Amino acid sequence: MFNRTAVAVLTCLLACIALIPATAVAQPPANPPPAPIMPPSLPPSHVVDLMTAEGSAAFGAQWKVSDVKIVEVPAIQGAMPQYKTTYNIEPRAGDANFDDSKWPTIEAKDLGARRSGGHVAFMWYRALLTVPPKIGAFDTAGAQAVLQVLVDDYAEVWINGQMPRRSGYPSPSTIQGFNMPNRVVLSTKVSAGDKFQVAVFGINGPISVAPANTVWFREALVQFYK
Image 1 (tube, rainbow, N blue to C red):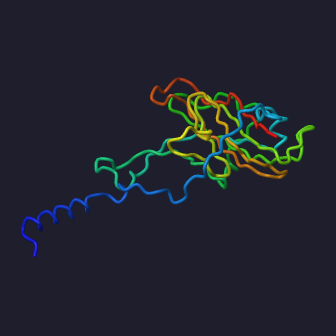
Image 2: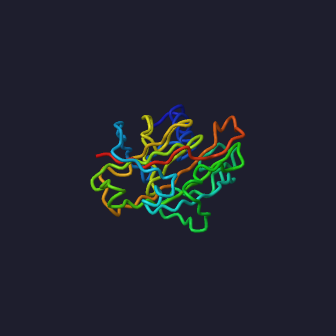
């Protein structure tokens, strides 16, 4: 039989456990992102500039663009009681099946246009790339294909609805730093007809400084390695 002290301690422990929100225990995501692949550092065998009409046309790419809004949403489950709301972005267009049919279409050269009103600003860019059998004299079959984009100032890159990443490791690079190129392996061995839905989330930054700057591409390339 418990004495009064033991009962009091047990009651206190149970009360403390009841106060811990379910989300306080770290849970793995239901669908963890795929592991990233490190792209080659060697010079590529062939490069296509997606910021030219000819380069984007080689992949049948039609670029779509959208402004991004910051919207107020309910706070997450388990948030401290003083937090009733928080913020998210709209649209959330990384998904491969996201409907961008009503977005404006831009020419490849206009990836370099300065967009947004500056300060805390974000932009989405989307295009479907289809690998052709040949680009000029270059045979694409069996090549490793790498997408390289450099967005002023930051970018996050989604491929076929996924943003490969691994916490605690240098990104190779669906997520990358200030004015650094994102180099993302599309496939280690492409075939003609392979399709890649690309969604690039461009970010003006540094966010904490909120510069009077805009969002634009410095480069957008597909690099092939054989």
